[in-house]
Image 1: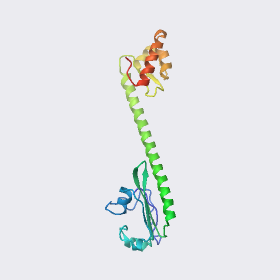
Image 2 (image 1 turned 60 degrees about the vertical axis):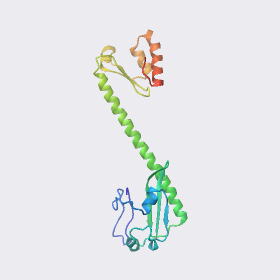
Image 3 (image 1 turned 45 degrees about the vertical axis):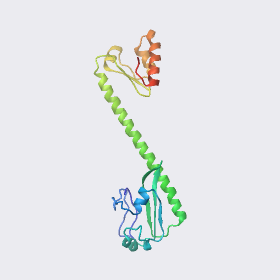
Image 4 (image 1 turned 90 degrees about the vertical axis):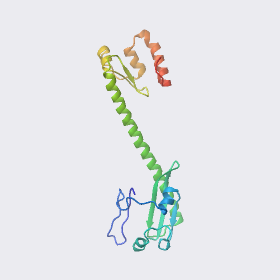
Length: 204
């Protein structure tokens, strides 16, 4: 359980926690979580006290005056991300059950977007780390070496080239070549570099 919210009938206990303080680990064993979280089916129980199939703790439900149970899977792009459920002391109508379905769909989209953003940030951080490591490697090379970013956005000359040409500012590839190439060779080299960047192949 990632998060929970609620309180006991007599208000002596609070069950609210962003980390799912109560029942953080709920076993999947053939009951409602299997149907919702594994099979991806929604469940509405409108008479919890009389239900013997879905409710694992009927004594707790009776004590707390629980009337209804509703649960929907969180599905995005065909993948089940989790489960959203409510226990209610008031009857949950079919219309309210439908509203909960819409809320679950929006929550699933939000989770997917958050996961995608996190993955993008991690990929970006990894790319920056690898780029920096590559720069450190080519700085040690005893020859002129230049590094183009994968998207062609900027170029970098290693330490040896900087000693020869002077400090070279980061520039887009074509502008960078104007700084380090003889004018007679610049045209052919630019053409070769453009083809290399477009095809993702080495310059032959």
